Length: 520
Image 1 (cartoon, rainbow, N blue to C red):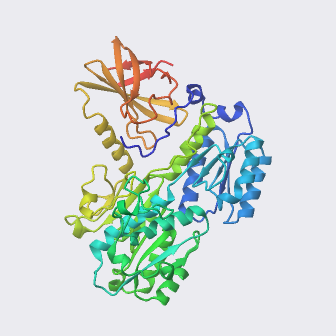
Image 2 (cartoon, one colour):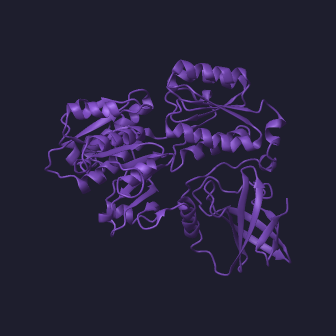
Image 3 (cartoon, one colour):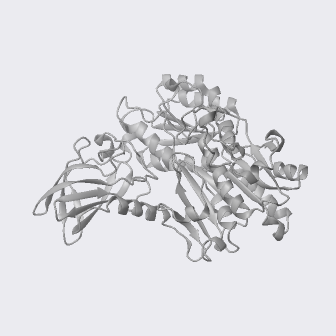
């Protein structure tokens, strides 16, 4: 079962039963410090907003500071939060390796440490949890999206070249760029340069396998990777960098960038500099978290919606919403069980975004997305459009899909419930839990089975099944368990009226109103 926005941790029921405002006052300073690398990127703004919206209703003071890309500034900010006795410090690091000592000191002061991004080689003793990303895999999926577009749109005999805009600011940045460079490798390799099979096992050269993201049209135009690679500023505008690349080589038409900031800024440079006819020759690809970037992706296939651009595809770390993923993880660490490891090595899923032109889709232009496979895959546009878990963000016939995520969740529920018996009666409840007001649903089936879930939720998409016995208006539910047997989140532990070990609960139903009331 697909999980796009999942808290993903079984919390102590007593914690979720606490009312808003009472959590922070129970003990501690009530302060959460958020240390951002900078505030010029979408990821920083979205994560700060998600953390604030998560914790301020619970009575916490959330202070967000920006290091403006300065390691020394970020070090001082973490030290300041430690001295202020912050209960939690969330860090989007400038250079993670330089923060090891100060993070350890902060933990010694008593702060919980949550990191957004990779942890490099620092000790696990320096943090409680990490919202991590497989940067090498992210880069390879950027290569996959690039391959898809290039092979569909570029002339294999045309006089055009490719450029890479990379970053060496950290080990994570180097990993992503190394993954992007796999587009010119005929055989599949890992980050260390070893031949690997499709599941990542190192193999001898005799057993090497073809690289699914290899693009011959790109590779034959790259005599030297170093010669066609330019260092970019990961938080800057980069229009001057793009201008320099095109000045040095006017034939460059495909640009693979480290992050989406360079794709949006570089695309804008193209739109401002080249004629409409020439603009269609260009293509930018990159990884990042979508803020305004969505508009640029739409604008690459639409003359009437979005922002006119040549941003042809993107890979989104965090599985669709890295900001919400981070906020959920921080919540779990703050309120979870003592001694539980909340994912010090827990790679996020990767979302792939394809703007699809009307020519490829029966006259309808679309921006579609889906989560990637666990191993790198290359797709044709036909394969993209036929994917079962495909979600349309926007299309030229209907405009924006305001409920894209909810509709996707409904699809997941339908898949999970495909074998459920007929004759269900649905009962809803507006429940005040640790995550705020939630709409809960129980479906009671004629054969004595039931299902529990949150219809339309963006944060928790799991479905739980059990059995029940009804006595008048009282329904006794037994053994709620995740219908996804591969999930590690087996029992619904986020709601105080459901026993977090047995999955048992008792509810009172109103058949006429179609509602239920939990018996706490």
